[in-house]
Amino acid sequence: MTAVAAYAILIRTVGDPGAHMYKDERDIFYYDAVPHVWHKKYKGLAPFSHYELARALQHLFANGQAEVTRQSTRQATYITEIDLYSDRCEMLIGYADPNAADPTFNDRPAKKRRVVPKIGDEGLEHSAHIIWYYEDQTRNKPCAFYLEGATGLSSTAIVRFVNKLLREFCRLYPAHFTVVDPTGAHANGAPKRIGLRPRLELRGHPSAEFIRDLQKGEIAELELITESNAANVWDTNGYAVEDHRGVVIKPSTVKHVPAAKKFIDGVLNAAVKKNYEKSRVVFKTEGNVRKNIMFYSQNYQLVNDLKYVKKSRIKELGGNLPNAFEAMYGPIMAEVRKIATGGKKPLSKKKLAV
Image (cartoon, rainbow, N blue to C red; front, side, top):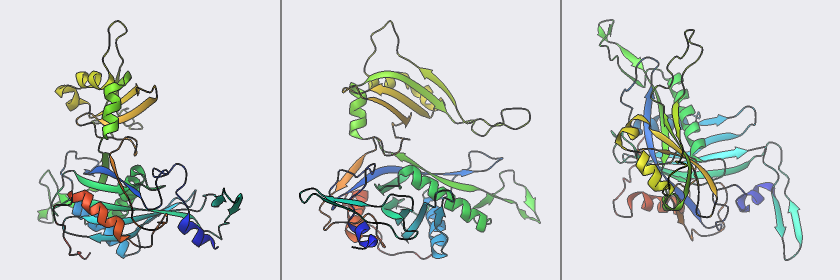
């Protein structure tokens, strides 16, 4: 059997969020996509629409520029396929790791094992299907984002990849993501425009397991974090900039303290939620497992990567599915579409050109 054929039937590796799934199943994780813009001088400017960000990615893909390779490891992340609609963006993101070990197969009943050596610069490949469901082309508020669990393609990796592509787009097309200067300044008789750098953030929906563990867990500490002054110059020379501020709260040693969830709810009043956008909780579950989780103070949405994020498992997709696909796999994408709309609202069928 060739190495390529072996990869096609290789069971998901240890550490993959879907490691305990059968080969005809996939896990789909729920996030909110939140757009932002950055400018070194102005803060609080309105972000661009999700559609505009997705359109930039599609443009890079159409021009063969939708790939990021880490020079030190040669690990590559890339858009394998992307389709843009008026209400959503569908993508297949690939990840290839040439440093991954040669796949090993073991037939326990026959007491046989074999290693399939990789050839040349081959890298073990994985891919993740995505639906970025913004519903309306003008929407720039948080929207649903559904991500298939896959090795090397966690939400953190996806955000890092998308934001690198957006930075590259801004470098190649500096006149695209611009707005009228907030000061009302003019240049050559016309309103001056300033360039902004767009970026995307993913916030995980909290799973029922997370809330349940907090409701029964024992609090160790709660750290409240604000990033409102991020990037502000700290020293007189401008060598240092602020990253975040925080305060650590611990349970009283003289009073009986309630379970973690009730403790947190008591701390996170309206004023605290306004002043500290993120919280980090350290607690022990009912089973005495220590957890360290970062979440958004307002709604318990998760900053963490996959950990405690709500998911749905889609089953009986047919056949022994591979780790990666050359194009979007219809049965997987059809199930993710059902998740996105609850199986009720019709989706646009017309693809949009770049």
